[in-house]
Length: 208
Image (tube, rainbow, N blue to C red; front, side):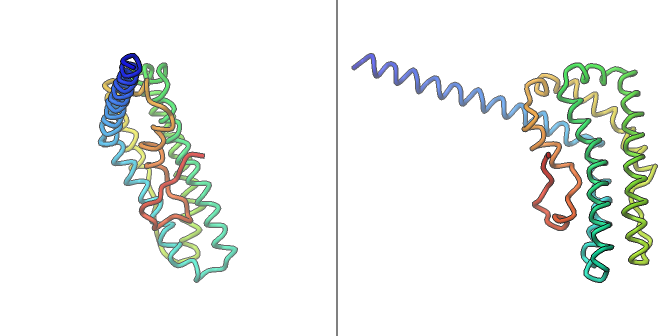
């Protein structure tokens, strides 16, 4: 009888200890994400994300005024633009979760090389968005809306330096972090909202 009681006690103590360790890991992981999310780069990225969404949202509110075929074109072009912007974000996520890439990006040469890549990718995404979404919406509505510009992207890329400095400080937590957790707390939060969900503040895109 005493042996059974001892075994039950040990099992209970082990479960408590395991749960406590898991809770500590989760708190450290959340603290790492919080540190990342307060960086100026993330704030600037969110501002640009809102600009991209706002033009489409205003059009969506008036889409009943236009031919369904024209609306479908805007929807499709917006979806493609979302995927182009999000591809940049996903690549940043992948770099942060890769130990070798994290080490490379915390060097001057590595960070400058990646900044050039991000600049190029964002410029291409912006150009497609301006031409295929903003301009086409302006043609339909007669408005003169503007999306994000070259200056916005330059500021965004300039702020990336602080991100890599932050990564050095949370390297241990990033090494332990699962991709699904990073997506839930970071990637999905920053992804451009789907056309269908524009205006639904509680909805964010999820990884495909």
